[in-house]
Image (cartoon, rainbow, N blue to C red; front, side, top):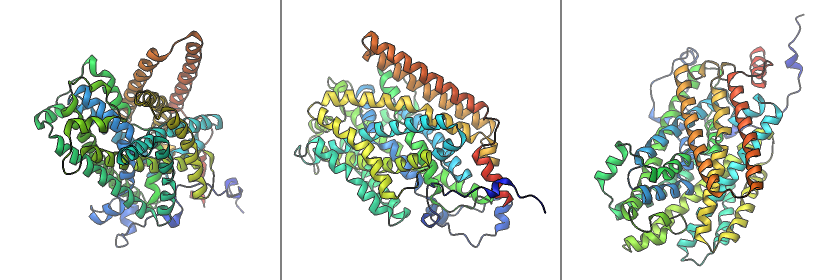
Length: 509
């Protein structure tokens, strides 16, 4: 009698997964033969299948439209005019590349980034990555919740204070739980409605403002950058890549039934996800361009250009463009509310995947959502109470939160690129040498740009020997951990990874 592999005798532990099998969307295509899929060939394009795969990319694109991005857009337009539109376009393309790699990881492995980080890195490193991801998520959520609260204050004519707007926004987790009970497609439809509201609101503003079409086209096609606009340029690029969104997309793509034993089905899923993600980010780019050009046309070269922020943008728009059929102040408020609500909901979604993946927690959905929202809402409430009466203080807070996001970017990008480059993780779907070089170049550029933002900010803000010493110590630890992650990208540990063992066990079964 042959000896059975040891792995078959290990106890089967129920692990946290992004979606249960009963929750996944079934892709209709029974008429296609399995022989065609087994051979690695994919069938011709189908609009019906594209529709069934559409959803995860649009949820991912919401992070490109959150209040932090809108503030970066309006400041870029007011201070730099149309001159940074080309950078906005290229930053979106870089974001698309990163998100496609995230989707590739999720589809090819059947596991999301947080799960794979837990399995492929030592326990201590996984815990550090988890803490960093949670910090990034909380920082992003503060911006999004504050953005929603500002919108509620605008739409209520200032009756609802900022702190109460935060409470209203916090209740959105119950909307999320309610919709999630009705299935993935219902939840995706709700987000599609919010994206549609944003598109309509900001397109309406674009029509009201009547910006220069010639200047818009030149801004997109002709690269231009000056020392006066470098801060806005860094902000445009820095706001595009959100660490939690990299984790999120690798989990969202698992909401569809894909047979990972058939190469053709995996490739088909990757093809359709690439198409829908591209379409989603084209929509997000259009919305960002609407916002940038409205403020470029109205405030570039004016005395108030440097003082416009998210908190006072509505007031300045109203003073510049006046009333109309529907006052532009309320149009801005509606668009901002849709952006804030949609991004806080996707933040709740991302928080569930990050916590569940890193810690392998098998909790009920309402419990995970409650924990995730509490982690963000409590600090946000404190912020709202402190900064409620000061628009300048809110702008300073936003700068600190942008820096916080910048600090976390390497801890999402480096593990992602490390994992998608490894054949023992991705199999035949690992990225090739050309794409690998391009991806690492883009990642290095994004990390360098955000590093510049951190250095520029801290050089202006840091005062005192004690503060400087603490900052230098933290910086040394930060750089050391980044170097460790890069070294892991060069070579994994010599022992078999958990993912490899699972593949061996599955093949032997």
